[in-house]
Length: 77
Image 1 (cartoon, rainbow, N blue to C red):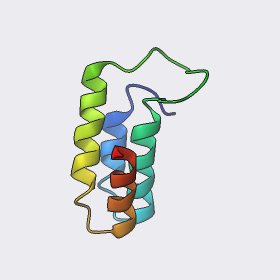
Image 2: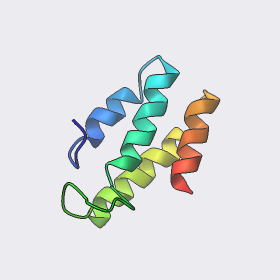
Image 3: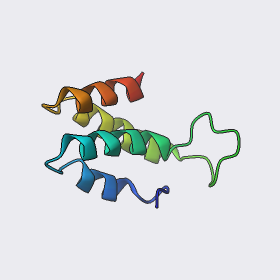
């Protein structure tokens, strides 16, 4: 399940050989912050979590698969 403590699991997914799994890890990392959700399921993300997700997305922009890198760029925007 996705939650504030799942970033390490998403980092594992980002190492998967399947680009669809890596691309989904990128999307899920952004979604765990719940920006723009009208009814968040947990407390607002801390500045530290936001910074970690930003670092993760920056790293994923260098993924060799275009789908993954494009997803990361889109999530950073």
